[in-house]
Length: 113
Length: 113
Picture 1 (cartoon, rainbow over the protein chains, first blue to last red):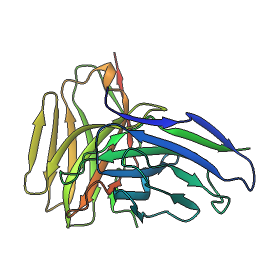
Picture 2: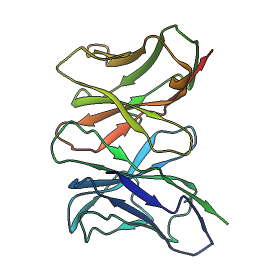
Picture 3: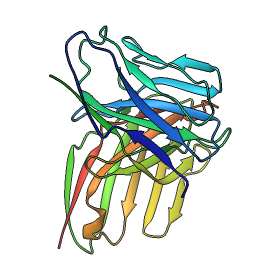
Picture 4: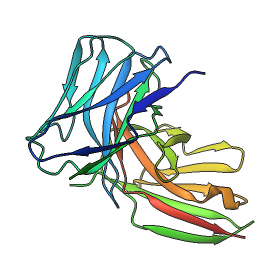
């Protein structure tokens, strides 16, 4: 079954702590993305990667970091510099070219303790 | 500055009737528009898309209309079913921007039996 797996489903962060959200895909997609959803708002792009070992900042990259060492994996680290991290985080992937159709994971809800 | 706007946070429709969800945009350089459907605590799923060179695209009960002069698109669902109850996001893509989408705030559709 092809798809995107995000873990954990729920995550709690203490003050000053870095946390890492996992995202794995077996769709053989080149591009991967991290979006953030806040209540009553649309999804906003944090980081994206079009190819292994390369990634670019999205619209709200401050306080976040990513890596893309393998095609299948695109973990997101929420650092202590992100002052308002409570949100629903969504990982997505897409094939190269196309019209922007994204395949999303089921999301991670991050809350601050 | 919000480039994609969904001005109706919610919409309630009777089962069997038509649901019309609206979306406005400001950037005339968008080349594709997409609609996603999202259930609570899940990732969005792709519903339907339209190229900026077309004015209508249909897929079963779902039709998207694009009015470029008004910078407006709409999603029609006919007939509406209770299972259609979800949040619907409109998204737009800049020219050749892969999966870098700009999302509206979403409209929560409730279809009542």
